[in-house]
Length: 315
Image 1 (cartoon, rainbow, N blue to C red):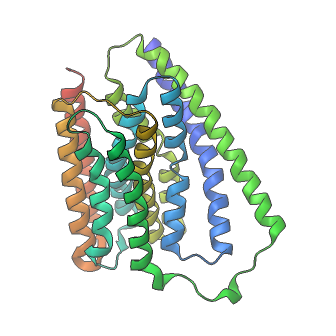
Image 2: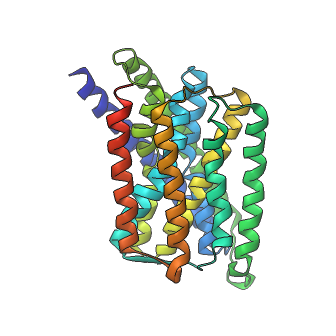
């Protein structure tokens, strides 16, 4: 009964968290369109802002001394973003076009895998945290150079009104405050629940929080499909995934992460490595991500979930 009440309350808070993030996302999108930013870069910007739930969860996890939840949440986000959400989006929208140039996308996939490598010894040092932060901006510059020809250059179509922009910024600020308050409630609720059950904090972050805090990405993917802006799905998910190692680096620099490396972690690492390889192959072949590839990504998430539950709950 206690577990059922906890799950219901937690998903209700995650729902509110997603709605708050949705307000932020909408306003960021409006500002981006007024500034004439291309859809790919708009997706990268949206990806950064849709990571706000993860950021607020990370901050509150450190404050409440349960950092493993945040780490599991951030690292579990990769397979949720690229397996569950991208896979489902491809099945719904059938295909998303790419430029087929793996050199544009591969650095991002390599960057996603860095936290897994750094944590194989059970901890992440401040030097490794610094590398994650610096590498984020290196990859961002690479992405900009790869797609800079797609940026809208016709300034005649851009009309900026200061009052309107300030209103959007105020609404974004209000959404961020809501995110912070809701994440605090989620952390406090989970902290109490962890005293009642003996489940790994990292596993809870991987399996539960990683889905809940990616509700904004699910919302964006669904709306992009509705409005026939399929390319926005990929760029938004890539932007959100790019932000996760950045947040890990910043949080770990403040307070280094320590993790018990066991079979669950290696299974987790192997699935993510395979996922990144598949996404890279799918990105290159045919210059399109197809429905069949979406089914493959979603199937991988399902197998991953089964494996983590089977092994994780026994440890």
